[in-house]
Length: 134
Ligand code: HEM
Image (cartoon, rainbow, N blue to C red; front, top):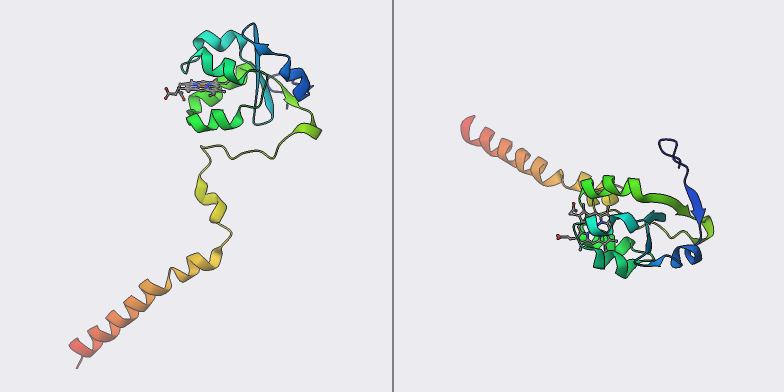
């Protein structure tokens, strides 16, 4: 996707792998490629962790840290491209995605959760009528 007129190039993992030293650090996060060379000494998590991931897929490491939405917005300026279709991985969920979304398909579970309060209300009504209306 081209954002703000910035053109994103298509790269292969082999091309990314060449940028695995401190002088040029590229990483892959969620199938997009980031050149974080100029960000190394600004990264609040330190340059070492980025250099460790240099030239490779870092989605899991990135998500494990639980980066903030600020961090995610910050990433955009280092994005230089995206992976070729044939090498894209099924995307990992972003930690900021609400997890309850995944279970929203099971509608009969939420339906059953109404039975207990409705039955309780019914029983309470019957007891009330028997007790007060006799
Ligand atoms: C372009 C990519 C990245 C950006 C823009 C970025 C940005 C940030 C920011 C802003 C923070 C401060 C805390 C927060 O706001 O969440 C942070 C912390 C951190 N980041 Fe990154 N980060 C990137 C990639 C990575 C990667 C690939 C790793 C791999 C392990 C990593 C590991 C860490 C660690 C360990 C911390 C410290 C967490 C803490 O002290 O609680 N980051 N990063």
